[in-house]
Image (tube, rainbow, N blue to C red):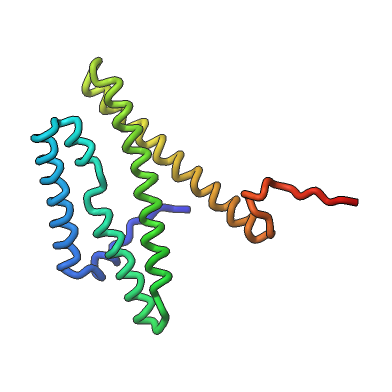
Length: 162
């Protein structure tokens, strides 16, 4: 699978959808700043690390997919939900990489900030790609199991009595 950049979504997005993303992202950042001033930067940083615009992007993705299907004369509700779910899975995988970045940086920063940053970016890339690859492999195995009639949760093979 080749990862590509598609600019077609920029043409489909309405101005107010960008405004929603901007306001929610800015609001989450301000909230993190208020929390940091009240409880300290360590606690505030946890809130800053939250995907500030995830909720907005998930709803926007759902509405774009639904609209696209409805323009084609089809019911797009299910497709919109699936697209938003796929975005959520990507956000979860990204969060795993972000946690690996933070842990690596925290452990190494005392020795050298520059080295800690380089090491953390490297670990982030490795963990994120590995999480994506693992999810892709598990999804293919799960899909094949469903097609063949075997349930991965059923414990594997069945015993047949003579």
